[in-house]
Amino acid sequence: MPCRIFYLLLGFFLTFAQAEKTPPRTCRILFLDGPDSAPDTLHLFDGIRSQEVDLPRMNLSKIYTLPNGPLTLRFVPKAITDPVAIPGKAPSVSVAETMQDIYLLLTSDPGNEIAPVKVQLINASTEQLKLGQMLWFNLTTHQIGGVVGRQKMVLAPQSRSIVDAPAGRSEDYSINLGYRRPDNDVLYPLCETKWHHDPRSRSLVFVIAEQGIRTPRVMAFPDYREAPEKESGP
Image (cartoon, rainbow, N blue to C red; front, side, top):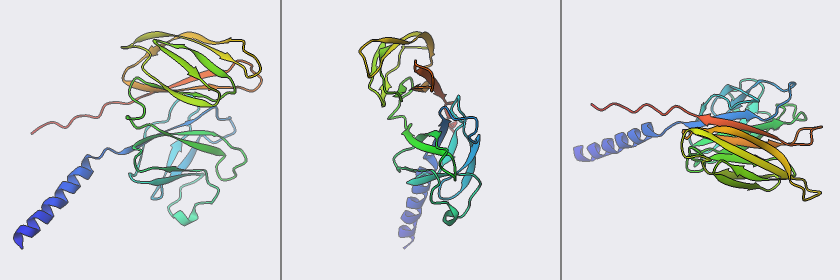
């Protein structure tokens, strides 16, 4: 009997140690091109607790932590502790258990009376989007193409694509992009400039159409995170 208790306790402590080593699930938020009339903060309810989160327009939010396991995230205007009190029309998104890091991309939805946003989930786990890589979104009806550093890129309308590191080290690189409208085959200039590559960072890049402006707009958002400190040995 003592031997059996010993192995039961050993199994418990091994399981506990493995759970302690599991890194926290992270989340960053971007309210892409959000209007001035939209809120700057909302509460994010994860099924257990709600936390107030920023809704930045021109950069990624700070890093928020979420529980592990399958989740349904909901945006609400104020703190909620009782899941029953969640309004049925609250903007929501499901997170699979396998997604350890995520981005929440918000766009304006003034028709939603609970929270005027739509939410899209982007898997930000490192096996999906590695350091140095760029995740490009073409949110226009145009075809986008050209050169991003040492990489060639073609984006169909309303599509996304991962672009490998545009440079080999921390350095400036050239971008030369054009676009074709759906009604003709003329190649119009879109972006000719230099960006800086940080191999420690991942990036989200969006090509969007702005009302009243013919040429699309390119917006880039780097995601750099400090490396976790290593535990010192005995």
